Length: 167
Image (cartoon, rainbow, N blue to C red; front, side):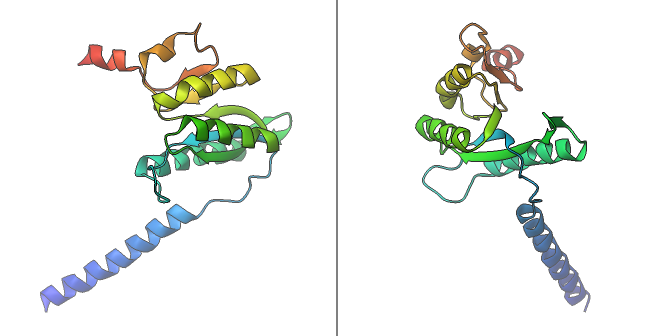
């Protein structure tokens, strides 16, 4: 009887946990109508339609930050900040193509990403040419610290050389 009771509680807990996970993954407010937008570049698993955990979590944090800016009434030229996302698939061409498509439909004032160091050189150069900043949340190549080569590129994680010194 005790085993049966524990099984029922386990099953109930499992069902609620699955409902909670599905609710969290799929529910985002639709207040993304601003013309002034941030563009997020997120790497997905190659050759698959299902994104990696890193891509999902990074995209969720990106959207959460934009939603918090709306909640705290942070505006640019009187408009709330909106967002667009591009799944690059670890391809520099897909990243630049996504940036071009976003620029043709919205007023993009900054790029968040890319996450891969191999996508940064062309994306950062493109951002410099059009006059907007690019901020990466995961690119760690030490060359990107050179402000002369990458004046429009910033990152929020230390470079590989800083990690090597720590080790």
